[in-house]
Every structure is written in structure tokens, then in C-alpha cells.
Image (cartoon, rainbow, N blue to C red; front, top):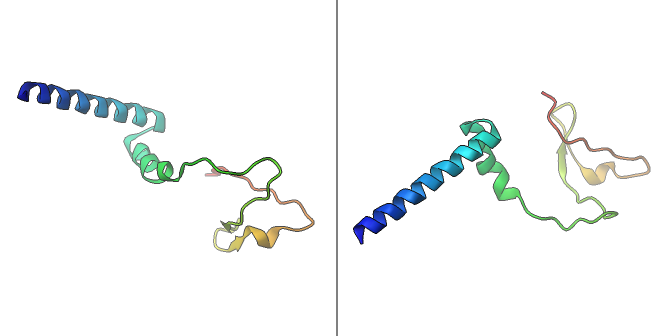
Length: 88
């Protein structure tokens, strides 16, 4: 029984290390993999927005990097364009 338990523990350890290695490869580095698991995965979920739905009100950071505003403050007659990405 102890021998079987050791084999199961060993297989689980190898699978855990292999999955961590694949995640590091996909993310770019172990640090990036940690960041992805720590910050991105808990927030991933399917939303309920459909084509034509109003955007939810969110608090956004202005282009100057210091001012914050709510999306509802910018709704109006003019179109609003949101750009998601990294510009570094």
C-alpha cells in the first residue's frame, strides 16, 4: 500500500512540474507564469454582454496616467473608443 501511495504521489508531482513547465513556456518565464496565475485566472469568466449591449460602467485611468474617470461620464453624442493593449 505504501508503495502504491509513493507512485501516485510521484506521478502527481511529475504532472504538476510538467504543467508548470508548459505554463512557464506559454507565459514566457516563471515570473510571468506566476503573474498570470495570481492575477489573470481568478478574473477569467464568461460575461453576459451581447452585440448591441451597453458597456458596463467602469472606472478607467486617463491617458495622462494620473486622472481617473467613469465610463458613464464619457457617454454622449460623440463616439468613445477604448484601446486595450500595452504601449511600453
